[in-house]
Length: 507
Ligand SMILES: [Ca+2]
Ligand SMILES: [Ca+2]
Image (cartoon, rainbow, N blue to C red; front, side):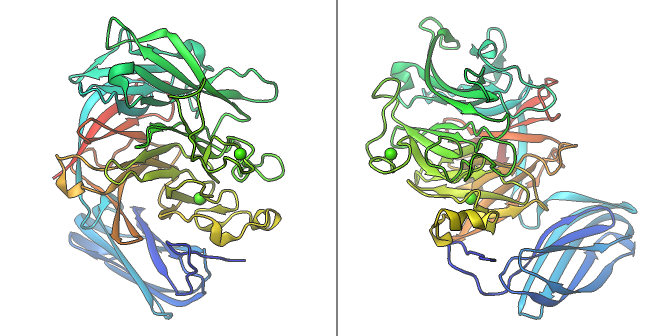
C-alpha cells in the first residue's frame, strides 16, 4: 500500500517530480525523485552549465522511461571538462505534466566539479567564531537573566559559561562527568545532551540537565537522567555541584537515539525529547516504543517542575484519564534530538531524526501521534503495525517538511529566528543536517519558510565564509536577543577539542 500524504495529511493524487539534489566531484550527478503517488513515464531531463569555460559537458539530455512513486533515480554527466565559476541547472519534465528545476553554483577545475554550498537565490549566512577549544558541544542556551551569558553543554559532561565572549574553562559552570557513563570519544550518542534554565531563574537559580547516567537495572545500556541543579549562592558563573535533584530516570535499552532536548514552553512546563530506545527500526517488544504509550521512549514529555515531588503532571496533559503515561505530550517519535518553541507564536518545532531514508520537521501538538515506526516521514515503514494497532494513517500527524538521505543524514533542529540583526531571516526556521556522511564532516545549513499557509520550502543557505562548512553540526542556540548560534565539531566524536561556537547572521 502506497499512501502518500500532503502537507495537511490529505492524499496527493497529482504527479510530482522533484530534483532533490545536485552533487559534484567527477562530473555532475542529480537525484530525481517521484514525490507523487502515480507512476511517472517519459521523464526528459537536461543538465546544462552556464558560465565559465566549459569544453565538455555543457549540455546533456536524457530520458527516464519509468519512475515509480517513492523512487529516486540518479542522472549523470560523467565527464565535464572546464574552468572557472559556473551555474548548473537541472531540468526535468514528465509527460504527466509535472516539472522541476534546480540550479547550483560550482567551480570547475579541469575534470573536477566543486559545488558551492547554497541554493540559487538563497540567503547568505555569515558565520562568526564565538568560541572554540571545546570537545563536542551539543547545545547552547541562555539563563534568561539579562546577562546575555551563553551556556554550552559539552557532550563529555561539562557546562561552560561564555561571558562577554570569554569561555570560563576552570572552573567550568558545572562538571557532570563523574555522574555519567564513560562515552566513546570516537563516536557516541550518549552524553550531556540537554540544558534548560527555569523561566524564573533570576529568582530561583534552578537549571535542568539531561545526561546519560550509569544503569541501575539489568538488561539496559544506560539511564537517561533529567536532573535539577541550583546556581551557587556565591558565584553566578558556577552551579552548586552538590545540589543535584533527580527529576526523572529513563532506562535506555541501547546507546543511541536518546533525544536529549530540554526546553520550557511558553506555558512554563518542561518539555523533554526522548528517543525510541535505539538500535534500528524501533524493534522493541511487539509494537516498538514509538507507538507504545506505556513507555516514555519515543515521546515528547511535558512536566510541571514547580509542583509535586519531583514533578507534577500538567492538568491538561493529553493522557490524563486515558490509557497511556500521563507524562506524555506527543508520541510516535524516533529521535527528537532537538526541538524549540517559536518565541512569537509559541509553536513547538521538533526535528525527528529518520531511519534509513527520511528526515522530518514536525509542529508538535498535544496528544499528536507523529507516526514512527508506522511511517518514516510521510512514507510507509511498517504498515502492518498500523493494521495491528487499528490506527488509520490519516490520523497520524504529517511533518511540515521532510527530505531524503540523498540530501542529508541526520536532521538537527534549530530555531525560528526572532532576532534583530538579520531582518531577512525573520520568522524563518533555521536548522541543519549533521553531515551528509559519517566519514567526513559535511554539515548543511538550511532554513524553512512557509511560502503560503501550510506550504513549506527548504533552502540551503549560501555561505559568505567557511564554505563548504566541513564540520559536523551538533545543535543550535539562541541568545537573549534571539540571535542564532551554531555548535559544530571537526571530528565525528569528542576525541579532540574541535568543538566550535558560531553566531550566524544574514545580510
Ligand atoms: Ca494515563
Ligand atoms: Ca514522523
